Figure (tube, rainbow, N blue to C red):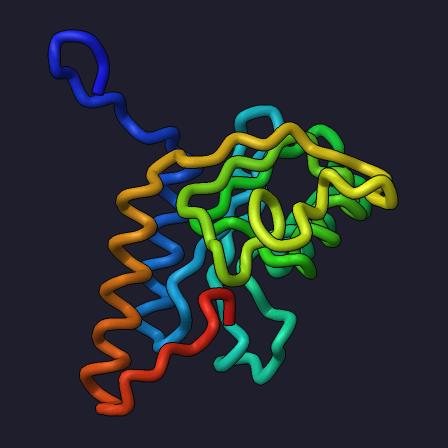
Length: 168
């Protein structure tokens, strides 16, 4: 909240990422969405799709980076920002580094599968050749609510109480 009780609006790219995450949940995928922007323009929007695509690498971040690289006609996205609803896993952090993403904005942290501020803390490793600026916690409550609701529905419908890993 801003001064005087005003609510600060979410940046439009994070709003788009949350919408993509909600669409993923409706399709039975873990609700993670990602948006790549360049000079303030949306270049790519993607949602998690490992089940739909039968591809364990089809995380929202990977799909958005691939689409942005194709749209821009280059593999280096150093002037681009990535907005994602969940802390990236190690594989996605690696893709972010290889694509040379300039800034990473993410919503919810992922203590189990995240690799930015949890687990391997990928960008802090001496072998990491590119470190984006990282901004965490943007729309954290909204993203966490989507994830909690998705997994609660899965537990209630399966009856086993099991929870698939957050990213996939």
